[in-house]
Length: 302
Image (cartoon, rainbow, N blue to C red; front, side, top):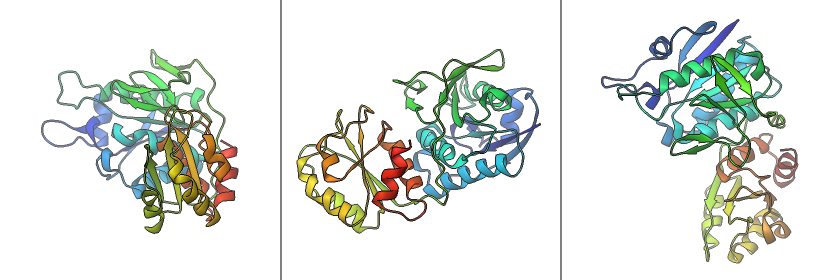
């Protein structure tokens, strides 16, 4: 029974003099529940995490469980884009069984009260427990467990609102208080890296939408209003992109499944995902080089 700890640096590893290694973080977290293999992974700061880094982490997580026979994987990650990387790992994990836990910190090691060591200790305990095997990727923060599909960064850590908390780590054991989301469809190939995300606003010029596709975007996610509506100025361009087999997914800033009149133009509902998560899902949907039909089918299965 062996866990894999993938340490990417960032705030959880920051101290007054340099950055702690994964092994040093493990020592600060206290005795692990079982043997741990540590891999230090060179990554950009979380606020600038590249798609190639996110894909490499997701691939490593999947291989660790599907081929290398680790019982669970813990990834330390900066909080800024942690939820996106965790969701990508969730989508790419497929049928691989084993705990997948992402964690980080809001306060560095040189802070008077660093939160990273406790978060890592709870994450290792969660990843080692059979309760999380097959549950997909989760985010562990402040002893709370959030399904990667719903985890959202807040100024106090992570939340799952409006969805229920997946569970908590109590006395070193995860206790699930709700049912994990059903497993998403496996993309079956390498996700498409070039997917754009645009936040809409009243009288937004359609040229902003065509600009990203002219630059090579193979799909576009638009964040609309509470009911998923987007400016009328974009309707013609959305229809044109659909006819070019470039999928347009519309997410709601309130995470509803409605997308207003854009649906009649051929746009695809983000299925309640936040805009940033919808971008990750669209990357996965286009993994086999498909277009609108592939994206629509994938989101229908979310």
